[in-house]
Image (cartoon, rainbow over all chains, first blue to last red; front, top):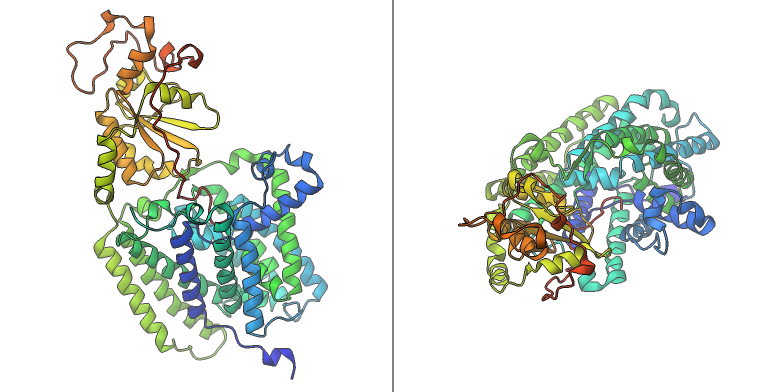
Length: 174
Length: 410
């Protein structure tokens, strides 16, 4: 029996959404801040930059906020949330027997091509998330539930951007 | 005051509170992974209408959370003012969203989902995460070139109910019903695209949808607490602070903080424009009494070392402003003792003589006549602290801020 056939199926999306909504509500209830992801990655990156080239941090205003002088870029709640997210993903993957080294893609492209696209897409995501001051979790999910006008405009923009170019990248996925 | 959100740093300490965030992160990661969001192919299927999981999960989460947030706010359990609502920078947000949408269809993940993909061994997710880090790096290097755009179209804490000028309950109710209807549409679309019969909603999901609509209706009927309701909850405690004069700070104490680089003082001048133009403190923000409540949510964005000092000619209007802001959960808010008049008596010195005095004087009237609109050019607008070393009874006690200064994506 191989791993795939032992893997449990994913949860019903409405059930998963309900659970996610409850987690989001509890995050608001307990901490006042919602959920996020890109901010944690941002701070991890700034931490590395600060170790490698601290002078550079002191020249860029955007980086200075997080790591200027003695401030530790990892001293932030979002870093702990991000690390927790990774562990939570692993835990759920283990419980569902879905942890497997693999590359998900459409049948028409090679793994190498998929990785190149993954890197480019990731770079766009990272760049866009900083420009929008938040990613799908922080701006979209959390800001959406807080009824922020900017977050709703942002969410429509994300879906619009993806749908607009879906046709051109159909071979990556189908 | 509502119990929630909890003052975590007060309860558990700076690092202790981080444990809670880690636990929330674990729950977040588990739900994302169980939803199938570690699998890029499944995520991308959204954009070919084959499997609209992204939409279903995301909007189910939003309507569940939005209903629970505003129901608990209506019931007085949760203080919506202390919840992080991302400030709106409209165009940078839309531009960033479009770039992310393109990144989504090319890369197959968003930052949160790539983390659970990485955790479950998906190599494309690992590469994607490196891409995200590179993109963030690139942003840090290039944003200086167009910082003006990045900070443009700032609308502050601006919400849909404010945009459409309807109450919160109505928006919540509409969002819930609209999302539920769109779930039916997306099931039909999926069935048509995959050429199969429409999947039935499980029984529990119908009950859950009914419960959600009912809760949203209850939130709508109760309504969100008004400023008066909020004041009612804190009236006893706060009124006694006013009566014991614990929050009226002497001009000398205000001057000390104005010259203390560790404290950010925001003098809130709540008088009308005429009086403000005649004389105001250097750095005073003009917020007429009738727009104080509107500004309250913006004040939540200020850093934790911010002290607000409301002032009017004497204390009458400033006390009204204090009550409004206190009720809206603005931290570290004080009143200038004796108002602008006491300030002038203390610091105007020779520049204002007895001839300039207004008498008889009405309550909350300026005590001196000004020949011109001196604004903050008058010497008393920013007295030199070295020459005016007056003693005072210190009253400012910095309270830890409960509202997050950052949220969502830190």
